[in-house]
Length: 260
Image 1: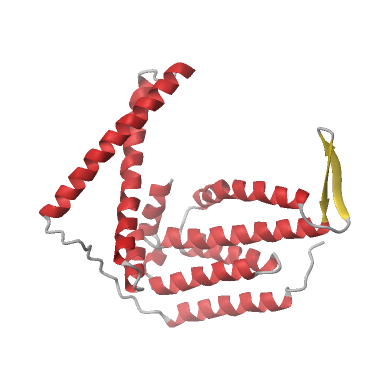
Image 2: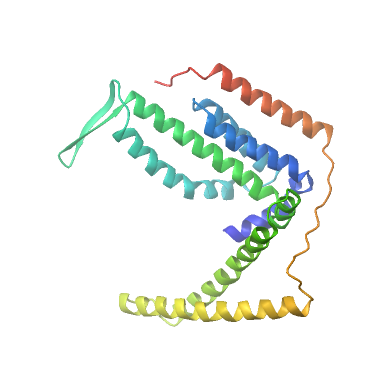
């Protein structure tokens, strides 16, 4: 699934838009989402980012929802704990579970909804960047932003070899599966151990091959990245300004609104 993200980013029409503008939109969304005191602004930002990703970025709607489901499960687990074990005020819901009384109070429920809205907003902002900006262009932007080159190069190598090792692991697991390597529990444990050890050896060999290939191409300790210059169009600037102003207006008008 992660490998598909970059494929969608390469095919997205928003790939040809200014990367600095997209990065500014995402950073604004993340900061605004964390700073929100009401669930309404984060939900508004999530809807805007989802619309931009699916309608403008041409990301498949089904794939987009699948991407949201995985982190959303962790968020829901967290907000259940917040709802039942924090806050004060009148009880909204009360019951017993295995003999233990559980209740949801107004403050706890509002805090849980706020955390959920912030989480969804952050996920939508990050997926907007991931599905519209290829990683190589994002690394070029980070380099232009004067981040340490060693950090950027290390991130590039890690990102590249995540997929190399994942492809190796899937091929090995498929070969084990067709040979009934996972037919019972004992064979499964043995196959997983062989998979881990083989993957370690192959990763070591791939590292040696990478080092040799880079040295044969006159690697001097620095990787060259070229940033593509794309001017910001007036319509893009207008839409971004409208989005920022609408979000800030929602911040002001909903700061004292209670959902219960």
